[in-house]
Amino acid sequence: EIVLTQSPVTLSVSPGESATLSCRASQSISNNLAWYQHKPGQAPRLLIYAASTRATGVPARFSGRGSGTEFALTISSLQSEDFAVYYCQQYNNWPPLLTFGGGTKVEIK
Amino acid sequence: EVHLAESGGGLVQPGGSLRLSCVVSGLTFSDHAMGWVRQAPGKGLEWVSVISGVGGVTYYADSVKGRFTVSRDNSRNTLYLQMSSLRADDTAVYYCAKAIAYCDTTTCYTGYNWFDSWGQGTLVTVSS
Image 1 (spheres, rainbow over the protein chains, first blue to last red):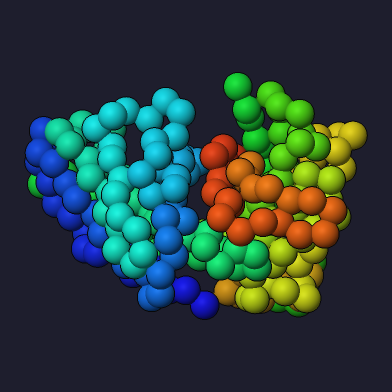
Image 2: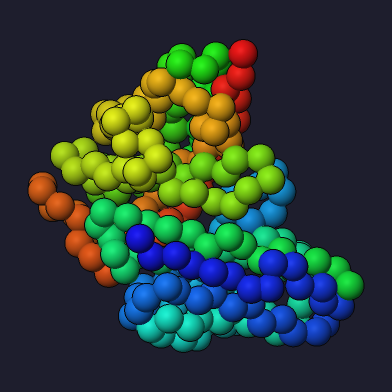
C-alpha cells in the first residue's frame, strides 16, 4: 500500500502570505496525485489533479507541482476563505486502492 | 451544476446494518463512476469504495471489504452503500462523490481516479 505523508500537520499563516504544503509518497506515483480543500461541515473540494492541473473554477493562486514521490501545493496570497484542511490523494496503484494523506491544516496566524 | 445529496445515516448498534443513499442530479448519472469516502471524528479522509458507471465493476478498501456493498440504480440517479457487521471504527461522516475514472465492463484503468464533486455527507454512529 502506498502511504502519503503530509507535512506540516498544521501551518500558521497570515492573510496575504503564501503557504507551501508537502505530500510525500512512500513509492513513486508518477504524477497521479490530487489535492482537495476541506472546511468543517462542508463538502471537500477538488483543487488539483494530475499533480499540477487546476480543477474547473479553482483560482490561479493555487498551484501544484511534483512527480515521483515529492509533491507540493502552494497557495499564494492567502485569502480568508483559504483557511481549511488540505488533503492529497494518490491514484497510481488504482485499481484497486486509493489513499489519502493525513492532511495539513492551514490556520490563521 | 452537479448536486449530490446523501441520506440514511444515523445511530446503529455494533453488528448492525445500515444503507446509505446518494441522489445525484445535474449530469447523466450512468456515464460516471461514483465513490464513497468517509471521515471519522477528528481524523482525515479515507476512501471506502468505487463503482463503475454501469455498475459492473466495484472496488473496496480493505477495511470494509466483505462488510460493505456499493450499488447504484441508474434509473433513479441513486448510489447506495449497504453497510453490515458495523463496528465502532466505522463511525464517520460518509461522503458520496463523483469520480473521474475510466472503466469498462471488467475493470477500471490506472492513472485516473479522483473525485471532482462531493456531497455534504451523512453521519453514521456505531454505538451501543
